[in-house]
Image (cartoon, rainbow, N blue to C red; front, side, top):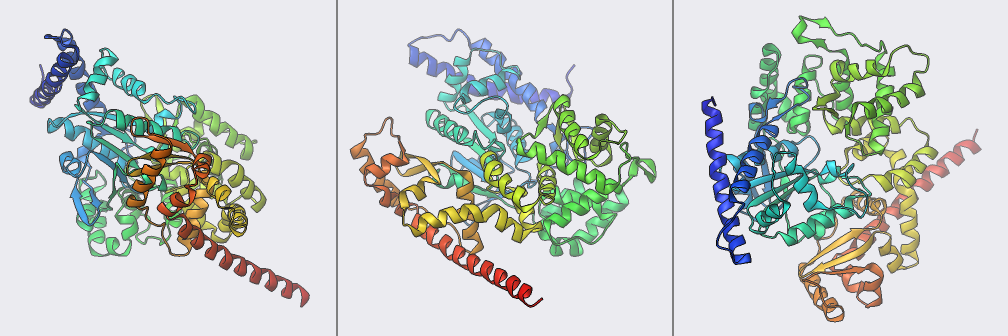
Length: 597
């Protein structure tokens, strides 16, 4: 017999399904001029089973703190606000967010809780009987498709089918066409670099085709979204002090430590370390490490180092101070080097989810590189990563990082051990090709740890190429360095990236000048669309052109003006000149020093 709570949930789901199926039935009847809907019972059954199973699946997650047993998200979840222009929007009710528009991009730094927020939206949509939600974790596309093969509709149907949506795909299409689903695309920033353009275009095509369905996308901040004029971009806000305290209050932790930390957080820690205490993941790490060190570092990389050290040396609170053994018997520094190499290798391959065989394969590579004479096994390392340092968690049949930011941090740590020559080759030939750099904590950490080497090895060579073209005033090949296609759609322009690395370098150097990328002009984009349309009529309201076609039409200058490209280039040029002058002073100083020896 179902308990009271299960009966309530079942009743909510039944009512939501009725609200969904009836409009689909009417839609099919009108579309096909049929008076009856023969598959009504089948569709009701499919949706009820799907919602029941998916609600259970997305109601619980493992976290750094709850790494062994999944916890209901509402036992620790604290609602985040999102900022839209100058307005703060409470995300407790999904309808509050959708009220500003039915195309939303939520951006935020790693660890702020975007994925948990999406699971909350999924639950909330059902509980409020708002609309049937579909949650798609975009990172799973990485191992599913190759470049040019993205079939988003089929993947959505496959995802739902795995959650007991057992009916013909045609009825999913009818449901989408009537706007009876809300689509939650989580983690666009976790898509591999070689797939990102295809996924972006697939999402935009999907948005156009099923324009009645609300869509929410989460990602770390990225310039990719600048041309998405049909989407509203909102920012996930960090926790304020009241929210941070409420979150700590909800967490299951040793009472004495938690009580003391709560008081310290209220009195001084939040104010002194707001950049850490306002991010849910980092706040949780602060709690874990607090017992070891009541003082927090100022730099992010120092914070992660302290956190890993605390986790490595921690005492198991459930065993009355009994120190956990390290199965590998490695020292702290040797274990950190081994783990850093593992993170570096998996990060470069954009691997965030592992089968046991894949995980052990990575561990073996690292062991063979640094610990050839050691007696421990790959399984010993895995045991330490799960139980001793809490870096890896079991998630069903797979393994995942307790949080992706740990992978990025340790990948950056390992990168700093490489020579300048190797770092330059790494970035120019691998990182910029495989990894999306915007909003990437790996880049942020690496820049903090080795600022001068970062500019020299990771920025300068590409910046020099851009500068050479700038000096020659070769604007077309210069623009072609960054973008390969332009998609016009009424008042919006979508830019398909040619080289993520070049665009990153341009963006980074602009930031070094304490400047920001220029705003794109909606009015100029609209005028340009009509000119292009006069030369090449739109197909369904959309025109897709290679950069060369824009150049041949004689409209390149107008395009560059619409997206403020000349302003960006001038800011870049000013930075490059200053950096070369600083570099020359360093060289002169070294020569003078040698001459006086």
